[in-house]
Image 1 (tube, one colour):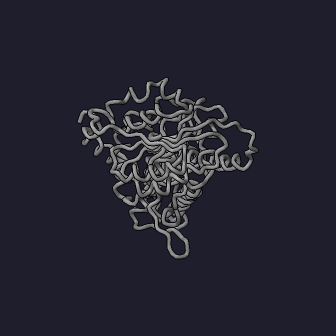
Image 2 (tube, one colour):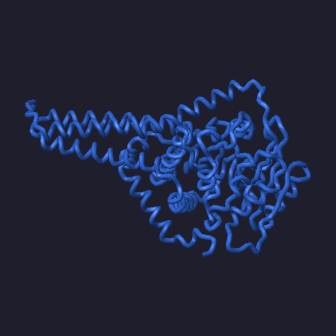
Image 3 (cartoon, rainbow, N blue to C red):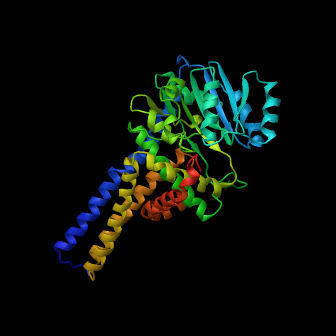
Length: 403
């Protein structure tokens, strides 16, 4: 069983496995690891901040819809930020129930820099969300605007300082990061997944997040998140706001960032203090809604990052398929089987550990469960993305303002 006849087929299969492994490690894995390394640099920069940076005055625009309960906690977090310059908070109430107005009215007596405006109820044939943000940005008194949503929470009183830091250092756009991990916390303070599907969703979220973050870190920004984004008003007005995508209900973050961002004017901020948590308890619907929206708007964005990650999935299929064929063709010798197992395990462990380390800085629990299901995610994620893209385009009328 230890004897083996080396044939051209065996050599070819070995070569395919090795090439696939090198492609994954030098491509996708390198980009995923770059997100963790960038987060480490951002955290180090936060610790080394000597207080000599001249921060700009900031207007924080909060898009709110039926978020009264969360705003009770969220607004004080915003209004008590440790920020060294002037700042204001503008709530844009998108036709929400009276609760939002009541919360703001109570807090206005305590905070003189809190304001609220409304989206007209009779607005038709346009994106209410884009209109809301436009109203908020136009109402802003200061040149730097920060965008977030009423269903979020900040995790540090240094959030605003850290998100705006790249702009204070000369950039025009700062891409922040927000997350929603579908987990619970037990009595010992340890996080666990609500269900196996929660684990799959968490890893899926990490896949899509590392796609655009790693691409932006490499100097090719094309997407952002509406929950945690900062830019200069001049960028907004220079681009004539959302005028190029007014026919679309969404895209106020990803399509807009793709239109205005460049290698030189954009930075990614991933310090722990700069991150935002999404608090919506309806995890399943929120996940599906966001995937369907991005499944539709992604057709208007560059496909470079998606192609790299999808081709890495194809490389996984090639590696696993070639390893299986090598084991069958080389039998009864166990040498091809042992070689195939060693190579696939090396790829599996190396890749999974890279993703797990990055998941920690993104606050998305990966755990041992993530390591176990990771090869399945790698191989089937493009099919899942295609499913949401097709589903999103089947209901394309709901993504247009004229619907």
